[in-house]
Length: 358
View 1 (cartoon, rainbow, N blue to C red):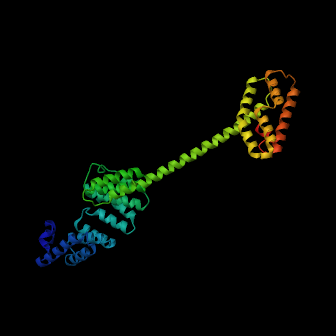
View 2 (view 1 turned 90 degrees about the vertical axis):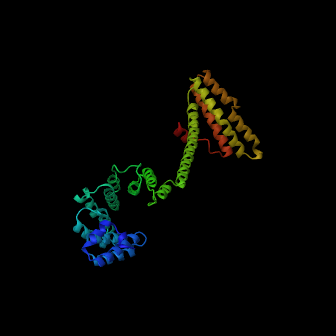
View 3 (view 1 turned 45 degrees about the vertical axis):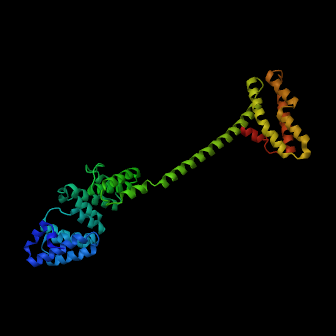
């Protein structure tokens, strides 16, 4: 640790001090630079010692402010940086001052610093750093969309690399994520990882978290669940179609005999229902009820010649007596009701149900 390790411009600022004091202050400033990242509290102690010996030199006060900032002493840092600014003028370390305001819970003041005349004087990386801080202040206030807009500058370029580019890309990804734009956030975390040549950020890990395969698996499972629901809906449609067929059959049974095609449709519908009727009858019958089952099968398959004859007469026009047709229909319904009573079957609708469905 030698005073010669200090930057030449800083050494020149110390020339106003006597030689011994200048060397002591220089050693403290060198230690601040060495310890700032790994031990900020110890670095702050050296900075305070230098300030006590050279409190009227702007670079010493600025160094004390930076050390306090890294140690999380926001109020002390802001005070030292303001003092250094009054001594030297300019807009140096404006981004650090704005971030101190955030640390003190005053994001509005950080935004005001970003709008100041001094802020307009900043160029390059200094301007980028201030934008990052102001965007952070917007996010502190829940103004996520404004934070995104704040960071949209020509410097936001995926092809750029280096510390400043990585920090800007990372901050932009954070703002996008806070605004609910996850896909874009993933892209910019990946850009930040590519720009971060020195590994200063955790952009690669953040990108991996957003692209977690578990999330994809969850989405796939949700899609499968939707497919199952659709299958259930299709099954329900089939059931509704069956009910519709029954309704059509009832309507056809009530039709007159003038339309042969309509009667043919009715016979086709009846044939389609035969299997269900016979199966129900066989399931309900005991071993001693074979005769009853046989009667049921005869009724279902059309072996009851009298009823079929009436239907055929109606279809061909041989039965011109409307009253006779009504009697045939009444006899058929009575036979069906009697059959249902024998089996205890509730599937044969009563007059009210037939009226409702017709």
